[in-house]
Amino acid sequence: MDEQHESEVTEKGRKRRHGSRLNQVEEPWSRRRFLREVALSGGLASGVAVLGYLGYSREAIRPKQQEVLTLRDFRVPADSHHATLAVARGEQVEAMVREAVQLLGGIGRFVQRGDTVLLKPNVGWDRQPEQAANTNPQVVAAVAQLCREAGAKQVWVTDCSINDPRRSFNRSGIEAAAQQVGAQVRFPGSSDFVATDMQGTVLKVWPVLRYFHQTDKVINLPVVKQHSLSGCTLAMKNWYGVLGGQRNRLHQNIHPSIVDLAAAVRPTLTVVDATRVLQRNGPSGGSLEDVKRENTIVAGLDEVALDSWALGLLGLTSSQVPYLAMAEQRGLGKVEWRSLHWQERQVG
Image 1: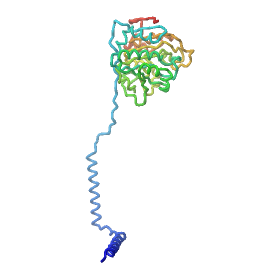
Image 2: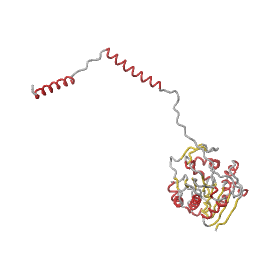
Image 3: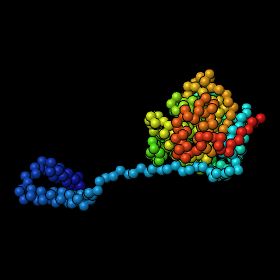
Image 4: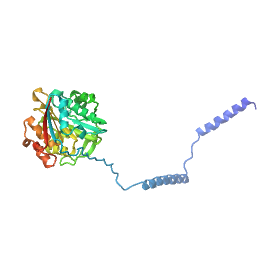
C-alpha cells in the first residue's frame, strides 16, 4: 500500500469513528448507577455541611468600635511674675501683638523650638477684612511670625468655616497673610475629623478636627463680635470652629455649649483681635456701618476674663451674658478681670 492510499484509509477510518461518537445515544441510567450517584452527591453535601458547622460561631458579629480620643491640656504653667491679661493699644497691629505677648512673658514662655503650633482664628465667613466678621489677617500673621521666631517647627492655621472654607480663607486675607510668614493653612476635609470625648454637660462625643490632636501648642485668635444668640462671639465661643457635625444643634443650649467647649479646649495662649469690632448684625455682618475701629489687642491666659473685658467694646455687661458666670462656676476663670494681674500699654 503506497503512502497516499494508506493516508486515505486512515482518514476514512477516523471519520467513521468520529461519526459514530456523534451519533451515539447514551444508555439510560440503571437503578444501581442512580443510587451510586445519589450517594456520592449526598456525601459531598454532608462534608460541606460539616465544614460549615465546624466554622460556625454562636458569637454575634460586632462592629469594630470607633476609637474615641480626648483633647490634651495645652496650657503652660502659671507665672506670677507676668501679667495674666495684657492690653495693647495703637495703630500698628504687629507692634500691638508683640507688646501684648511681651507683657505676658514673651513668646518664649509659650512656644519652644521644635514645636508644632496650631493657630485658631475666626474664619467663619466669606467676608473682607474691613467687615470684621473674621479675625484680622494682620493679627494672624503677627502671631505666626512670633511663633516662627521662637523656633516653631510648623505653624498651622485652621478653622471650620460656615461658608465655603477656601473662599472664606481667601477673601478674609488670612490665607495670604499666613503664607507670607511661612505658616500653613489647613483646610478641613470630610476625613479630617476624629471622635473626641468633650466630657461636657451638653457636648459628649463629637467630631473634632484632627489637627488639635496632632499639635504641641494651640493659640486662640478670636475677633470681638456681636452675636444674635449668645450676645457675643469672643474667645470661648471661637472654639465652635474645632467641631464638625451639626453644630447648629448646639444653639438650642448655646450658653452651656460654650462653657463645655471652653472646658474641653484649654489653649496655650489667647490673643483677642479688637482692631475692628463688629458691634451689630453679628456674627456674619456685612455692612461697614456696623464696624467700629478700636485699634486694640488683648492677650491672656484666662478666657473668661478676656471675654468679660471685651464686653465693654460691645456695650454689654457680664450679667447679660449667662455663659460667663457658668464658666466661672466650672472653675474656668474669673469674670472680674480687674482682680487679676493685668497691664495696659499704649504702643507707638
